[in-house]
Image (tube, rainbow, N blue to C red):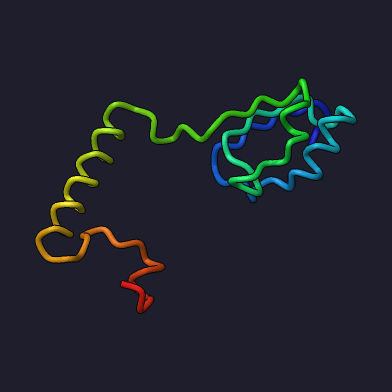
Length: 101
């Protein structure tokens, strides 16, 4: 990549090797970065917080009025289904394949 690039990662944390990111932010290869996902979530590298050329914030992909309303509706639907029949409607795939549920 060219020197002085600006990186923004809002996709998935492991897309970026944070050790290399930190090294290249310090040496100027990467001018700056913006992150709302981290390689080791929920424990991002503290060093990223202290770099003046790195802006980080919590993932905000669901922070719209419409999405929050849809999440609320989904939660109500699943609570109602569980009360009625002991099963939620939107079971995560990891539990669908287990004997835990």
